[in-house]
Amino acid sequence: MENSDNKLVTVLRSMALIELELAKGKLESENIHCFIAGKNDSMGFAEGYRLQISSSDVEKATKILNEIN
Image 1 (cartoon, rainbow, N blue to C red):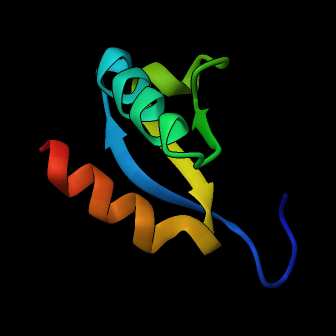
Image 2: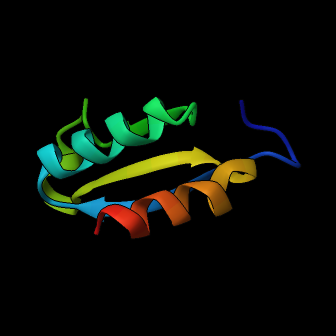
């Protein structure tokens, strides 16, 4: 998924994993593939979790996330 033109971008950060899980579900329902960084390591709790998507989906994802906030 990651190459020079299409990198992973963090679109949302939170200490609350459930918040990112809900946002991830919404984005995936709109055909935007997502990944929660920090979920499977001990650093996620200390630094928070990050919802990441492909850089090509940033504009669409930002619009969707702004609608639900």
